[in-house]
Length: 471
Image (cartoon, rainbow, N blue to C red; front, side, top):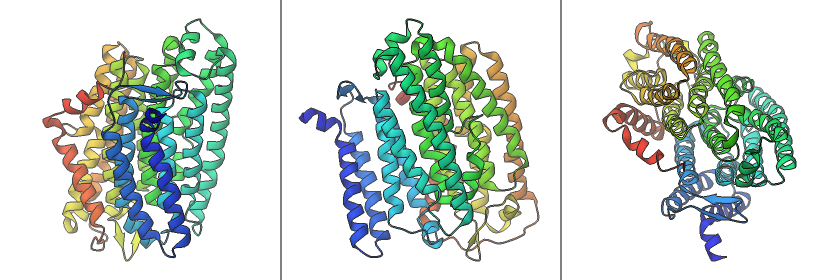
């Protein structure tokens, strides 16, 4: 029993902390700053707890909950990205009057749901974690109740997400019915017997997971929600749920569906190619930066899925490296948006960046580094992310997938370069207010430093990722 508690210590601590700060928020007036700071401390303490956990894999509760290097890595990534997203957006939250004490608490609830998702080894625990995360995200999407666009985006996300959750749950129930178990390991053994009904169930599960990571053709909510939700919420949506969703997808492909590779590989290849093409083409006509980043994220998920489509350990590892670098790039990109403020109002359009290199050279160079990295220009971190994925795809002789990926990379470079052209070569239109968001500036500095220096020791991240999956 004591051993079980030790394995669950981060989740237990996070749960008790949520209850505690919820009481503080309820009984202390104007407690946003206090709850916000406590939430940041809770995230840091949870991070330290996970870093100090033993490395050997352990399973509890009839093997439904697993703690191993894979789950620990993704929990660290979830916590670190949440910490940066939360703190870099605090000034934005306060100035836009969405500084409700529930805000950071809902973020913590979403993190708790993601923890159970990435540690699940059972369909029931996986679905409980997924719904806990989803319910928190529904609230976050529409937290700015006085803003019509925010309310609309919340309703749209809720309706479509509920539909995808229903399909996913139907797939889980079919999988249980045809295999006789909800445990991933048992399901893997049953699927080795060419269970046609279970393969049918797998399709529904893939549909649900594709929605959660904004993969085509289940991306329809992404641009509208990204644009309509407050930028602080959009930055969270663009980063943290993507990490948990991809971790879950890799886990499903690597454990319960490992023995039906040929059945799901074609589906993943189709989703990957569709996402890369739509992400590259649809973003070209966008004028709103948040909407452009939405299509950009769809394209990047397509690249990560290309690694998953190989169905091999090296492909999964390249996808994990990709999502890790993607997190850094997007946190930096959204932190730049927090500095685009004129006369107390935040700007979101590409045209607002016209000629800012003359008056805001540091913001301009930050955009340059991050956008070049998103485009995959060497020697920045984004180049290595794509390089590892394409190398893995070519090693497995999936040449068509690699060619599509390379072509869409060239196309997507156009709209990134168009923004850089606007920043450096267009006539100056406006001058942004003096930046007061020091945390966002520090976040941009860390992000850009990582992307610039990644080429000095690119194998460091690879060496860590190599320990996550068992052949």
